[in-house]
Length: 178
Image 1 (cartoon, rainbow, N blue to C red):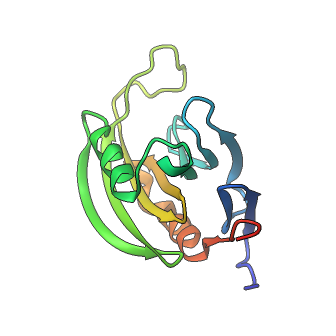
Image 2 (cartoon, one colour; image 1 turned 60 degrees about the vertical axis):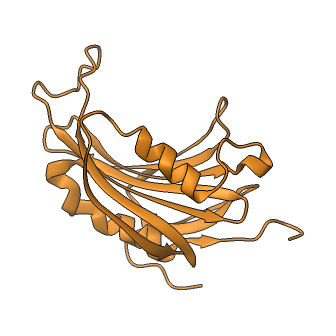
């Protein structure tokens, strides 16, 4: 195994359909969740908060089964199209690209949107602000993956290297008996 850079740790999941590992900063707090209505598994890493202490950088890796396994999507193109069709109304797409992640073809989408006001959320800033998101979509076997990095637009460049470290270190493990 490759030595971890200083300040990074290894996340490793070995659940069915979520058998992967990647490196992330030690200070980014992991939160795991599974979907109950839509089937998915996700690890969300909470990073630093913005200047106003109202919004944290978030990096997530989520896994969804394909339709063959009872999921909602036929394959990668269907998964990506559905996400694009449900972007926030204020979304402005900055870039789309293709790349390879963990040996798999991936769609790479960068966009920003105005953060919606949530009246009962006391931490929300008084004025509107833009959130910038980079989302990557790939398929490994019968599972679809969405990797996202979202943060205050003004802070995007401060931690985008964390996303690159996750993408560069991402590894999938075969299902048992495969």
